[in-house]
Length: 102
Image (cartoon, rainbow, N blue to C red; front, side):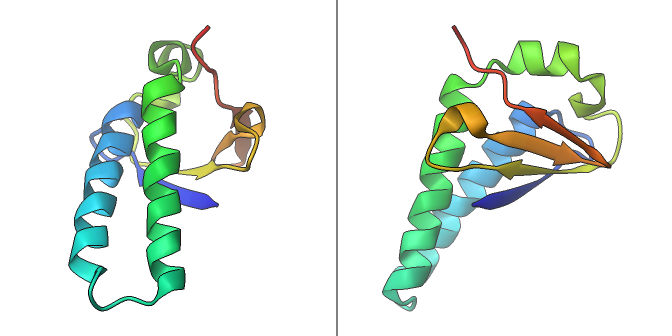
């Protein structure tokens, strides 16, 4: 699943938190109107963002990739799979693996 994060005025961590909160809000607003596929996609996005926020080493990511500190107006795509060790962050023309906490 690909999740877009806007880093306009926010670092990667804050942007992911905001997207997580928006996803939860959207999920509950659509719960009575959406079909099962839409709800499952929303649940998957929430789970991915939660895992990313809880397990990614945000400090290390920001120090290794300073362009993810929110001082540049960029869009980052979090690309996830069933195996978190393969997750990547794509921005501009760069793709980097997510750095996980030890």
